Image (cartoon, rainbow, N blue to C red):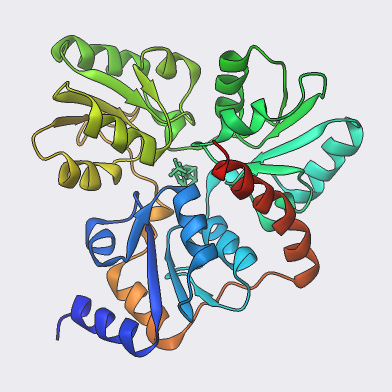
Length: 310
Ligand code: 13P
Ligand code: SF4
């Protein structure tokens, strides 16, 4: 049996489900039961009746799954699969920031630790951030963390001031506007689409800004057949599968003169072998202290409830 066949067999024996993010390597995406964005993955994790959730993504995503479905075993192929954005918001500093700015509703982007979520009023993802912010009465001041780029984008869309935490994603901040404009000159018939973790000057050039799932849907539904894609390059695998006829050009990163693409080192730390081993040995498991879990669940559940409303 090859590795993929062994994983499929183990999955059956152990009643496990494999959830994978769009930035995972193609082999992992292809063996997953569900591939999605942060919102879709947390919805799947909340509703699954599998005994084991194998989370092929990064730590905050697996942690969110455990918070939502604590009776399940949640395993991550590699515990070092972190996130620069989550790391940019240490819980003790964030707690002080909230105390120093009293009277604010605290909205945090899901890319943060369980401890930070426990300090939060409502969580959001890139696919529902606008809706979540718009759900807060206009006279209520808002703290938005940890992504300053998503925060600025939402401020621009809503015309509403928010107090922003100064965090960012290393991958999305690596896109180079000069190289992007040069690329666009070579492909003037392409539409630029971008993830809102990208900087303002990149987002200004984009016809569509949205979550990874939103970007895939846009490419599926738009009659244009060429797109410049400004997010982590792993998304191209699913996009190509969904829209084989489209020409997809990865947006160029600053330091990159070779492959012209951006990769998240944290997402790419997971391999098929590690995925097999974590399922076989049921390790490493994600654990969240119960006191933190109970507090973090409230803002995540609020987000899920609001996401269901039309
Ligand atoms: P999505 O929720 O859009 O998939 O984003 C997750 C992420 O980490 C983007 O860098
Ligand atoms: Fe975190 Fe950025 Fe990697 Fe997404 S792409 S997991 S935000 S470091």
